[in-house]
Image 1: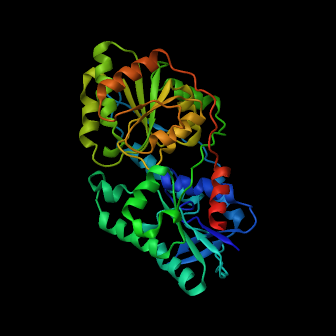
Image 2: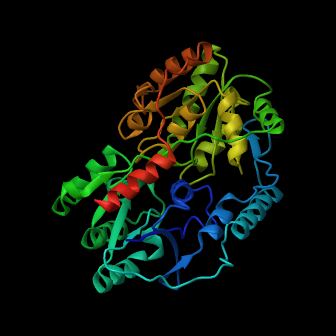
Image 3: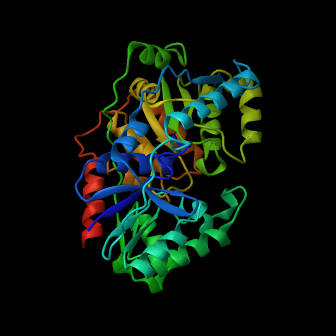
Length: 398
């Protein structure tokens, strides 16, 4: 049996997208294992790519990346040439990570019982056309993947909302897939609720990894130290988007300023949708001027330094399928406060306090306490990407 693992997104331009990050980390953990081959979708067909090309594309040198920082109320908004620099970096990442795929593509030799596993943006790429050919014409097996059911349950958080297309994609997955892997018990519960006829026994959980083996250099540490001129800060690593609930942290910062509580907040991530009013407020509210900074264009080394320098991390998102930023914060030794209502408690591995995402006063009290006395993390067993790869292969084999 051969396990064909789809790396279409891992070799594409969106190297810092959460879904793509999952695909890349699993691919790295699967590389070199017997019976595993990598495939990419081109012209609506899957083609094999050599393992060495995949590893080289994912693990190539990042070069000298300089994050863009805007300290709200102090710095000018990022615009003009700074945006162009971001686009140039994205173009360079596309070339480095195989956006043009300058590799030899070979037609896979698919046999009955082989498995196709895809954890990427299948509803965007149209992978299911090829998956159906493999399953119904060649007697192979297809294993689907589900991060969350947000487009169906909460279309108001998406722009543009397209719940029908996403739901139709998952309906088709249930017709083709031998099994569906979910990234948390919470997501599994949602999937079973929406697709009860598929069979709960065919829906399994694959816990994502949280490895933190990232080497930082003195310049990365100096960068983290300079974010607030050496003052303490909390970090929230997530796209600035309406679902991620950065508005709560803005209210927290205002109340902390009124109380005279020292402490700043670093937002790390790109800018998403539905936050124009929030950004305008952050840039013009003198009460919180200088207390919140936005870091974009941030590579893994700078992010690791930010985590390690932070007093603690926060994750007040309204809904998550897992919460990779929580486990990665813990992997860097950074305590974290997370929101209730979705899978973030699972991602917190039982060591993160949970608060309602809309109760500002509770977050103010908790964050003020953490700024004054950040707790030490108890011993925890972090999930690893090698372990996630083992679980994936076990799911395919049974």
